[in-house]
Image 1: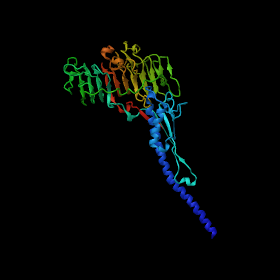
Image 2: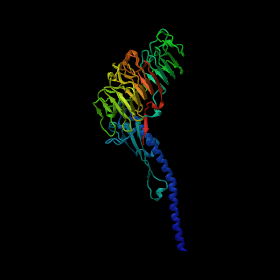
Image 3: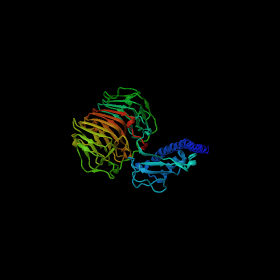
Length: 492
């Protein structure tokens, strides 16, 4: 009998231990999952908060201290995972999301982020005393959560006036949106025109104009600082036939109405800093690739090109093997493929630091009128901006400190087919004069002839002024998926 009672006691003890384990797993396991979930939220939000604090340093537009970045993470962790407060650590990441060797470990209150710091990896480790498991020897439990974020393209953080296909930033003067020549100018999206214009006796500011025999068709709303931006030849609003002698057979149509008298809006892409030479390299390189040659065809690699590049044959501007590529043209870029030839660029940003390029090698016999980047010729040009990274969707980018234009098919004999996807950006108008104008279609007053071709841009165009001419057909289509945005992007 006593043996049986002993066996029962052993079984009862085992059962009690088993019951404790089950209840411990249920109670402490559930609590532990809650703590891990809170820690993961804290790591996610903490890394994103750090990226927001890091943006000025990443873009080179301001200074940030380690103390500021640490405080941004600490505040989030304390709020979202109280048991993780004081139990977190972080490391800086570069734009590609890779750890920066030798970077300081956070939290710390001294020093500044290392060069190239555009992200942060955060690890949160909350620790607590278990409710039941301590009865069987577990004095503490912990969970670990990790997340990383970098500065990048965030579609939820689009720039102001997100539906504007064209943003003309000139604050004064007429003809800031100008359709000339004999081609067709179509805008699928809104227009944001910043010019107050020069009101005449009829009160019209004449910032949006259509001239000669061209047709301007706007499928969107005209948003303007001027009370009425239209050329007086096109009043009353909605008129489609020119009444001035200079407008021989052209017309303007717009179906989205006009909203005038708006306050000036900021440059929607002002946050995008000029790329440093050091960024013109494919990982794992630590210094930029510098090219002193001027190729005319073939495959080009991302890097800094010290002389003007003139492409006259079949050519490819390559990316970084599936990652975004950056090209910096110190002497400018002229792309003029011949008939039947193609030039392609995918997942790249083309940045010009030149005030003008020569296009005599392209066969026009004319100098480009202040084009930092000239796309023309008689072949096909197809270019797409990066899909990710600091310069996501920034395709053509003119140095803001240099008065220059972006020119598309704007020379005599240009008959190119040009297809651009991404942002076309040029706000280079120092002192409010000169430069910053996207000109298209062989403007007679500029290119010396009629020109022609077909030009399509999907994304957004942000320039000082926008002018068309010649016989080219120009279509600008706002595409929300190709508009640069700015914000933290989770990568881990």
